[in-house]
Amino acid sequence: MAGTAKRMKLVPEDDYMHPVESASNFNESMYFNVFDPEREIGGFFRLGNRPNEGYAEMTCCLYLADGRVGFMFKRPEIENNDAFDAGGMRFEVIEPHKRLKVTYSGKLTLLTDPTQMANPREAFKTNPRIPAEVTVEYTGVSPVTGGEPVNEDGSQIQLDADKSFARGHTEQHVAAMGSIRIEDETFEIEGFGLRDHSWGPRYWQAIHWYRWCPMNFGRDHAMMLSLICGEGNEPRAGGVVLENGEYRKIKDVSFDTDWDADYYQKSFVAHVEMEDGEKFDVEGEVMSLIPLRNRRQSPDGEMMMTRITEGMTRYTARGKVGYGLSEFLDQVNEDGLPVSVAEGYA
Picture 1 (cartoon, rainbow, N blue to C red):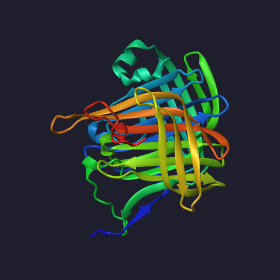
Picture 2 (cartoon, helix red, strand yellow):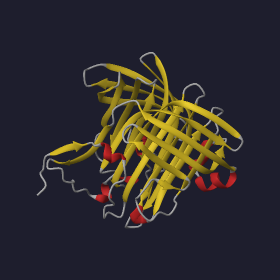
Picture 3 (cartoon, rainbow, N blue to C red):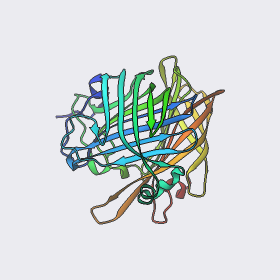
Picture 4 (cartoon, one colour):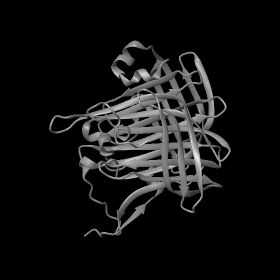
Protein backbone atom coordinates (compact mmCIF):
# COMPACT_ATOMS: atom_id res chain seq x y z
CA MET A 1 0.00 0.00 0.00
CA ALA A 2 1.24 3.46 -0.84
CA GLY A 3 2.37 5.52 2.12
CA THR A 4 0.72 8.79 3.07
CA ALA A 5 3.94 10.79 3.45
CA LYS A 6 5.05 12.61 0.30
CA ARG A 7 8.41 13.51 -1.16
CA MET A 8 9.60 15.12 -4.40
CA LYS A 9 11.15 12.90 -7.06
CA LEU A 10 13.51 14.71 -9.44
CA VAL A 11 15.65 12.64 -11.82
CA PRO A 12 17.31 13.46 -15.19
CA GLU A 13 15.27 10.71 -16.86
CA ASP A 14 12.17 12.86 -16.39
CA ASP A 15 13.41 15.04 -19.24
CA TYR A 16 12.26 12.20 -21.52
CA MET A 17 8.73 10.99 -22.28
CA HIS A 18 6.50 9.41 -19.62
CA PRO A 19 4.12 6.43 -19.83
CA VAL A 20 0.62 7.38 -20.90
CA GLU A 21 -1.87 7.25 -18.05
CA SER A 22 -5.47 6.07 -18.40
CA ALA A 23 -6.97 9.54 -17.78
CA SER A 24 -8.51 10.84 -21.00
CA ASN A 25 -6.92 14.26 -20.40
CA PHE A 26 -3.37 12.95 -19.92
CA ASN A 27 -0.96 15.62 -21.15
CA GLU A 28 2.80 15.73 -21.53
CA SER A 29 4.20 19.10 -22.50
CA MET A 30 7.44 21.00 -22.87
CA TYR A 31 7.74 24.77 -23.09
CA PHE A 32 10.70 27.01 -23.94
CA ASN A 33 11.09 30.77 -24.11
CA VAL A 34 13.97 32.98 -25.23
CA PHE A 35 14.63 36.72 -25.09
CA ASP A 36 17.59 38.45 -26.73
CA PRO A 37 18.44 41.54 -24.63
CA GLU A 38 20.44 43.24 -27.38
CA ARG A 39 17.99 42.81 -30.27
CA GLU A 40 14.85 42.91 -28.07
CA ILE A 41 13.46 39.88 -29.89
CA GLY A 42 11.82 37.00 -28.06
CA GLY A 43 9.49 34.08 -28.31
CA PHE A 44 8.09 30.91 -26.81
CA PHE A 45 7.44 27.40 -28.08
CA ARG A 46 5.19 24.69 -26.65
CA LEU A 47 4.15 21.16 -27.51
CA GLY A 48 1.54 19.43 -25.39
CA ASN A 49 0.85 15.80 -26.31
CA ARG A 50 -2.66 14.54 -25.54
CA PRO A 51 -2.36 10.98 -26.88
CA ASN A 52 -5.63 9.70 -25.36
CA GLU A 53 -7.46 12.48 -27.18
CA GLY A 54 -5.49 11.89 -30.39
CA TYR A 55 -3.86 15.30 -30.82
CA ALA A 56 -1.08 17.62 -29.69
CA GLU A 57 -1.23 21.32 -28.87
CA MET A 58 1.48 23.18 -30.81
CA THR A 59 2.22 26.85 -30.16
CA CYS A 60 4.89 29.03 -31.77
CA CYS A 61 5.03 32.73 -30.85
CA LEU A 62 7.73 35.20 -31.91
CA TYR A 63 7.96 38.81 -30.67
CA LEU A 64 9.79 41.10 -33.12
CA ALA A 65 11.53 44.33 -32.15
CA ASP A 66 9.13 46.50 -34.17
CA GLY A 67 6.07 45.21 -32.26
CA ARG A 68 4.91 42.59 -34.76
CA VAL A 69 4.18 39.10 -33.48
CA GLY A 70 4.36 35.91 -35.51
CA PHE A 71 1.98 33.31 -34.10
CA MET A 72 0.68 29.84 -34.88
CA PHE A 73 -1.43 27.35 -32.94
CA LYS A 74 -2.36 23.90 -34.22
CA ARG A 75 -3.85 20.65 -32.95
CA PRO A 76 -2.03 18.11 -35.13
CA GLU A 77 -3.08 14.47 -34.86
CA ILE A 78 -0.82 12.12 -32.89
CA GLU A 79 -1.09 8.39 -32.16
CA ASN A 80 1.25 8.04 -29.16
CA ASN A 81 3.48 9.85 -26.69
CA ASP A 82 6.80 8.67 -28.12
CA ALA A 83 8.25 12.12 -28.87
CA PHE A 84 7.66 15.87 -28.96
CA ASP A 85 7.33 16.10 -32.74
CA ALA A 86 4.11 17.51 -34.20
CA GLY A 87 2.80 20.36 -36.34
CA GLY A 88 6.25 21.23 -37.70
CA MET A 89 7.78 21.60 -34.22
CA ARG A 90 10.28 19.25 -32.62
CA PHE A 91 12.01 19.18 -29.22
CA GLU A 92 15.16 17.11 -28.71
CA VAL A 93 16.86 16.22 -25.43
CA ILE A 94 20.57 16.17 -26.24
CA GLU A 95 21.68 15.76 -22.61
CA PRO A 96 19.00 15.69 -19.89
CA HIS A 97 18.94 18.68 -17.56
CA LYS A 98 21.73 20.29 -19.61
CA ARG A 99 21.17 20.65 -23.37
CA LEU A 100 18.02 20.65 -25.52
CA LYS A 101 17.07 21.82 -29.00
CA VAL A 102 13.94 23.37 -30.51
CA THR A 103 13.14 23.48 -34.22
CA TYR A 104 10.08 24.71 -36.08
CA SER A 105 9.33 24.77 -39.78
CA GLY A 106 5.94 26.02 -40.90
CA LYS A 107 3.67 29.01 -41.24
CA LEU A 108 3.13 31.89 -38.84
CA THR A 109 0.34 34.43 -38.85
CA LEU A 110 2.07 37.83 -38.79
CA LEU A 111 0.19 40.30 -36.59
CA THR A 112 0.83 44.03 -36.63
CA ASP A 113 -1.69 44.27 -33.78
CA PRO A 114 -1.23 41.07 -31.73
CA THR A 115 -4.28 41.84 -29.54
CA GLN A 116 -6.38 40.78 -32.55
CA MET A 117 -5.73 37.23 -31.37
CA ALA A 118 -8.49 37.76 -28.77
CA ASN A 119 -10.68 36.70 -31.73
CA PRO A 120 -8.48 33.96 -33.25
CA ARG A 121 -10.77 33.05 -36.12
CA GLU A 122 -10.82 36.64 -37.37
CA ALA A 123 -7.10 37.16 -36.68
CA PHE A 124 -6.08 34.07 -38.66
CA LYS A 125 -8.40 35.06 -41.50
CA THR A 126 -7.37 38.72 -41.90
CA ASN A 127 -3.59 38.64 -41.34
CA PRO A 128 -0.92 37.27 -43.69
CA ARG A 129 0.42 33.76 -43.18
CA ILE A 130 4.14 33.53 -43.92
CA PRO A 131 6.81 30.80 -43.83
CA ALA A 132 9.10 30.59 -40.82
CA GLU A 133 12.08 28.54 -39.67
CA VAL A 134 13.32 28.40 -36.07
CA THR A 135 16.38 26.66 -34.61
CA VAL A 136 17.32 27.36 -30.99
CA GLU A 137 19.71 25.39 -28.80
CA TYR A 138 19.28 25.64 -25.03
CA THR A 139 21.86 25.14 -22.26
CA GLY A 140 20.95 25.04 -18.59
CA VAL A 141 22.42 27.84 -16.45
CA SER A 142 20.67 26.77 -13.25
CA PRO A 143 19.69 23.63 -11.37
CA VAL A 144 16.38 22.04 -12.37
CA THR A 145 13.65 22.77 -9.85
CA GLY A 146 10.39 20.95 -9.18
CA GLY A 147 9.76 17.29 -9.94
CA GLU A 148 6.96 14.86 -9.19
CA PRO A 149 5.39 14.53 -5.72
CA VAL A 150 5.26 10.82 -4.85
CA ASN A 151 4.39 8.73 -1.83
CA GLU A 152 7.24 7.98 0.56
CA ASP A 153 7.64 4.53 -0.99
CA GLY A 154 8.01 6.08 -4.47
CA SER A 155 4.56 5.11 -5.74
CA GLN A 156 2.40 7.56 -7.66
CA ILE A 157 -0.13 9.72 -5.88
CA GLN A 158 -3.72 9.29 -7.03
CA LEU A 159 -5.06 12.41 -8.73
CA ASP A 160 -8.53 13.66 -9.55
CA ALA A 161 -8.02 14.00 -13.30
CA ASP A 162 -10.86 16.53 -13.67
CA LYS A 163 -9.15 18.90 -11.21
CA SER A 164 -5.54 18.30 -12.20
CA PHE A 165 -3.10 20.64 -13.93
CA ALA A 166 -0.04 18.34 -13.81
CA ARG A 167 1.35 15.31 -11.99
CA GLY A 168 4.94 16.44 -12.31
CA HIS A 169 6.46 19.77 -13.29
CA THR A 170 10.08 20.95 -13.66
CA GLU A 171 11.59 24.32 -14.56
CA GLN A 172 15.07 25.56 -15.42
CA HIS A 173 16.62 28.86 -16.46
CA VAL A 174 18.59 28.55 -19.68
CA ALA A 175 20.90 30.28 -22.13
CA ALA A 176 19.77 30.15 -25.77
CA MET A 177 21.38 30.61 -29.16
CA GLY A 178 20.00 30.15 -32.65
CA SER A 179 18.25 31.76 -35.59
CA ILE A 180 14.77 32.79 -36.65
CA ARG A 181 13.76 33.24 -40.27
CA ILE A 182 10.43 34.91 -41.03
CA GLU A 183 9.78 35.05 -44.78
CA ASP A 184 12.89 36.88 -46.12
CA GLU A 185 14.08 38.22 -42.73
CA THR A 186 16.64 36.27 -40.68
CA PHE A 187 17.51 37.09 -37.08
CA GLU A 188 20.43 35.55 -35.23
CA ILE A 189 19.51 35.44 -31.56
CA GLU A 190 21.53 35.00 -28.39
CA GLY A 191 19.93 35.39 -25.02
CA PHE A 192 18.32 33.70 -22.08
CA GLY A 193 15.03 32.15 -21.07
CA LEU A 194 13.27 29.44 -19.12
CA ARG A 195 12.02 25.98 -20.00
CA ASP A 196 9.53 23.70 -18.29
CA HIS A 197 8.25 20.15 -18.59
CA SER A 198 4.92 18.82 -17.26
CA TRP A 199 3.17 15.47 -17.36
CA GLY A 200 -0.06 13.99 -16.04
CA PRO A 201 -3.78 14.80 -16.37
CA ARG A 202 -4.43 18.43 -17.31
CA TYR A 203 -7.32 20.76 -17.85
CA TRP A 204 -6.55 24.46 -18.31
CA GLN A 205 -9.66 25.14 -16.21
CA ALA A 206 -8.20 23.41 -13.13
CA ILE A 207 -6.61 26.66 -11.86
CA HIS A 208 -8.78 29.68 -11.07
CA TRP A 209 -6.06 32.19 -11.94
CA TYR A 210 -2.30 32.64 -11.80
CA ARG A 211 0.58 35.03 -12.46
CA TRP A 212 3.77 33.45 -13.82
CA CYS A 213 6.78 35.69 -14.51
CA PRO A 214 10.05 34.07 -15.65
CA MET A 215 12.90 36.54 -16.31
CA ASN A 216 16.66 36.67 -16.87
CA PHE A 217 19.11 39.47 -16.07
CA GLY A 218 22.09 37.56 -17.45
CA ARG A 219 23.69 34.15 -17.13
CA ASP A 220 24.10 34.33 -13.34
CA HIS A 221 20.99 36.25 -12.28
CA ALA A 222 17.42 35.19 -13.02
CA MET A 223 14.03 34.86 -11.33
CA MET A 224 10.71 33.12 -11.57
CA LEU A 225 7.76 34.64 -9.69
CA SER A 226 4.55 32.67 -9.24
CA LEU A 227 1.18 33.43 -7.68
CA ILE A 228 -1.47 30.70 -8.06
CA CYS A 229 -5.08 30.70 -6.87
CA GLY A 230 -7.55 27.83 -6.80
CA GLU A 231 -11.26 28.59 -6.81
CA GLY A 232 -12.39 29.55 -3.32
CA ASN A 233 -8.82 29.58 -1.98
CA GLU A 234 -6.29 32.23 -1.08
CA PRO A 235 -3.44 32.79 -3.59
CA ARG A 236 -0.31 30.69 -3.06
CA ALA A 237 3.04 32.40 -3.72
CA GLY A 238 6.22 30.76 -4.92
CA GLY A 239 9.26 31.20 -7.09
CA VAL A 240 13.03 31.29 -7.07
CA VAL A 241 15.95 33.68 -7.53
CA LEU A 242 19.08 32.41 -9.30
CA GLU A 243 22.35 33.79 -7.99
CA ASN A 244 25.84 32.33 -8.47
CA GLY A 245 24.47 29.13 -9.94
CA GLU A 246 22.12 28.35 -7.04
CA TYR A 247 18.44 28.96 -6.39
CA ARG A 248 17.08 30.85 -3.39
CA LYS A 249 13.39 30.36 -2.61
CA ILE A 250 10.75 33.07 -2.55
CA LYS A 251 8.42 33.13 0.47
CA ASP A 252 5.81 35.62 -0.72
CA VAL A 253 4.94 37.76 -3.73
CA SER A 254 2.09 40.14 -4.50
CA PHE A 255 1.28 42.21 -7.59
CA ASP A 256 0.10 45.76 -8.25
CA THR A 257 -0.98 45.79 -11.89
CA ASP A 258 -1.79 48.57 -14.34
CA TRP A 259 -4.37 47.24 -16.82
CA ASP A 260 -5.56 48.54 -20.15
CA ALA A 261 -9.24 48.77 -21.12
CA ASP A 262 -9.35 45.03 -21.95
CA TYR A 263 -7.66 44.03 -18.67
CA TYR A 264 -4.40 43.13 -20.36
CA GLN A 265 -1.39 43.85 -18.18
CA LYS A 266 0.47 47.01 -19.25
CA SER A 267 2.89 47.20 -16.32
CA PHE A 268 3.11 45.91 -12.78
CA VAL A 269 5.16 45.88 -9.63
CA ALA A 270 5.80 42.56 -7.89
CA HIS A 271 6.59 42.85 -4.18
CA VAL A 272 8.92 39.97 -3.31
CA GLU A 273 9.87 38.56 0.09
CA MET A 274 12.56 35.88 0.25
CA GLU A 275 12.63 33.01 2.75
CA ASP A 276 15.68 34.62 4.38
CA GLY A 277 13.74 37.85 4.96
CA GLU A 278 15.11 39.98 2.11
CA LYS A 279 12.49 42.17 0.44
CA PHE A 280 12.62 43.94 -2.93
CA ASP A 281 10.38 45.03 -5.81
CA VAL A 282 10.41 43.85 -9.41
CA GLU A 283 9.01 46.26 -11.99
CA GLY A 284 7.59 44.85 -15.22
CA GLU A 285 6.91 46.87 -18.38
CA VAL A 286 5.06 44.93 -21.08
CA MET A 287 6.62 45.56 -24.48
CA SER A 288 4.28 43.42 -26.59
CA LEU A 289 1.31 41.24 -25.61
CA ILE A 290 -0.79 38.58 -27.29
CA PRO A 291 -4.01 37.26 -25.68
CA LEU A 292 -4.64 33.53 -26.05
CA ARG A 293 -7.47 31.29 -24.89
CA ASN A 294 -8.50 27.71 -24.20
CA ARG A 295 -12.14 26.63 -24.33
CA ARG A 296 -13.71 23.41 -23.07
CA GLN A 297 -17.28 22.24 -22.71
CA SER A 298 -18.11 20.73 -19.32
CA PRO A 299 -20.08 17.45 -19.06
CA ASP A 300 -23.25 19.46 -18.31
CA GLY A 301 -22.80 21.52 -21.48
CA GLU A 302 -21.33 24.69 -19.98
CA MET A 303 -18.69 26.38 -22.17
CA MET A 304 -15.69 27.31 -20.01
CA MET A 305 -13.07 29.76 -21.24
CA THR A 306 -9.56 30.30 -19.95
CA ARG A 307 -7.72 33.48 -20.96
CA ILE A 308 -3.91 33.53 -21.04
CA THR A 309 -2.24 36.89 -21.77
CA GLU A 310 1.39 36.48 -22.85
CA GLY A 311 3.52 39.61 -22.58
CA MET A 312 7.14 40.07 -23.60
CA THR A 313 8.26 42.10 -20.62
CA ARG A 314 11.20 44.30 -19.66
CA TYR A 315 12.03 43.80 -15.99
CA THR A 316 13.90 46.04 -13.55
CA ALA A 317 15.04 44.76 -10.17
CA ARG A 318 17.93 45.45 -7.83
CA GLY A 319 19.34 48.01 -10.27
CA LYS A 320 19.45 45.54 -13.19
CA VAL A 321 17.41 45.35 -16.40
CA GLY A 322 16.34 42.01 -17.83
CA TYR A 323 13.78 40.42 -20.13
CA GLY A 324 11.24 37.66 -19.91
CA LEU A 325 7.57 36.82 -20.02
CA SER A 326 4.57 37.80 -17.96
CA GLU A 327 1.90 35.11 -18.32
CA PHE A 328 -1.40 35.95 -16.63
CA LEU A 329 -3.98 33.14 -16.68
CA ASP A 330 -7.60 33.68 -15.69
CA GLN A 331 -10.85 31.87 -16.00
CA VAL A 332 -13.44 34.22 -17.51
CA ASN A 333 -16.69 34.76 -15.63
CA GLU A 334 -20.22 35.12 -17.02
CA ASP A 335 -19.69 38.88 -17.40
CA GLY A 336 -16.62 38.33 -19.56
CA LEU A 337 -14.19 39.49 -16.87
CA PRO A 338 -11.01 37.72 -15.77
CA VAL A 339 -11.85 36.28 -12.37
CA SER A 340 -8.82 37.74 -10.58
CA VAL A 341 -9.96 41.25 -11.55
CA ALA A 342 -13.59 40.54 -10.74
CA GLU A 343 -12.57 39.26 -7.29
CA GLY A 344 -10.37 42.25 -6.51
CA TYR A 345 -6.86 40.86 -6.93
CA ALA A 346 -4.56 43.32 -8.71
